[in-house]
Length: 434
Ligand SMILES: CC(=O)N[C@H]1[C@@H](OP(=O)(O)OP(=O)(O)OC[C@H]2O[C@@H](n3ccc(=O)[nH]c3=O)[C@H](O)[C@@H]2O)O[C@H](CO)[C@@H](O)[C@@H]1O
Ligand SMILES: C=C(OP(=O)(O)O)C(=O)O
Image 1: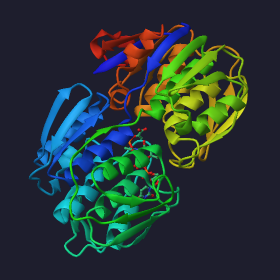
Image 2 (image 1 turned 180 degrees about the vertical axis):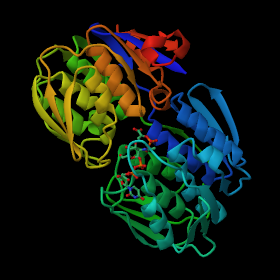
Image 3 (image 1 turned 135 degrees about the vertical axis):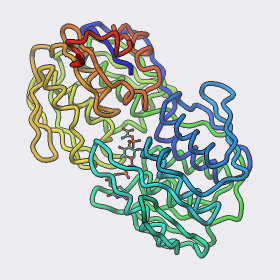
Image 4 (image 1 turned 120 degrees about the vertical axis):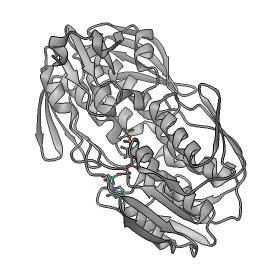
């Protein structure tokens, strides 16, 4: 297991380039199962989640090749309909195999993905949507069983308690593209990753209208073709660098930061008084001076609202911004696992219901051994460590490796003092291991 050792207080300078978007790639990999022809997917980040997804797809019978680090070639000529527990449990997003299997094979058996530290993540809306396409849906012995022999287009409403569902929209969309008749998805998620999936499906010959809106109309076709498709840049990775630069002594340019995908974050950073400029070609330059921002309140919401996947990083920023801010989670009301670890570094945060009440400090945080609980919590702790006085050890970096390609290398390229070590190299009195 890897750990990061970070010495805080280093200025950031230079340029960093973001990788392809994990959350766009995952359903796009699943979509390659919709055709027997070859799909070439470019700009794929080198991440454990994508390697798992490729493994599951290969296990279903597809031929999977990787001509270079960021390109995958997938040919799903003959595939089977069962994705077993031992593979699916490793990655929640494998639930988005349901749609393509239903569409292509008219049946699917996919294990339920299991628990998640950021809170309950049911798939009731996915299943309700498939039932509206006239599929027979049954959950037994830990598996979702779908019989789609009589599937036809239908009217699906995907609004839930916390808004729409991103992978649920991807599932219904992928099921509908090869299902006879017209499907209308209302209250569809419109995250940039869903738009990217739509564009990939269009390039395969799918018929979809309303792309980017909350209402998608899909006319089922008999067959889809192969494609070569380049995945969008990762807005969450870009946002993470922008937040880091806003709170440190920094002057950096983030390549692959597309302002149209980052409006809610940029709006909040502007309100806080951050000094940034949008440059041509998907580049944002951020200059930071510690302690100069104003506190802002944040509420996470489905797109185009403030993304929950940047909430933890925002908690770090507000922890070092003097004054009071309230950060409210409307997507995953319990997604605050980073808070106790930030408190260990001196952050003054209280959780009240679905809100974090953050009293930003005038003095820097202090380095400490901390434990990452999930992907974005890892990023929040690394940012906190970069702003802190002294040395921080961040354990369980495998969470980070799910979603940030070469994060340590990229941060070092900007001047941060971040080192990846093996757990064995961590002093035993700090790791808590005897
Ligand atoms: C692989 C991927 O793309 N992951 C992203 C995706 O997750 P994911 O697609 O799993 O998230 P959803 O959009 O489905 O979940 C949003 C909310 O709806 C609830 N819900 C969802 C489905 C359902 O059937 N019933 C239900 O109640 C969830 O518990 C959650 O509270 O979108 C989330 C919200 O932007 C992001 O944080 C994740 O990074
Ligand atoms: C929560 C996330 O991913 P997943 O849905 O794959 O758990 C994330 O990307 O922040």
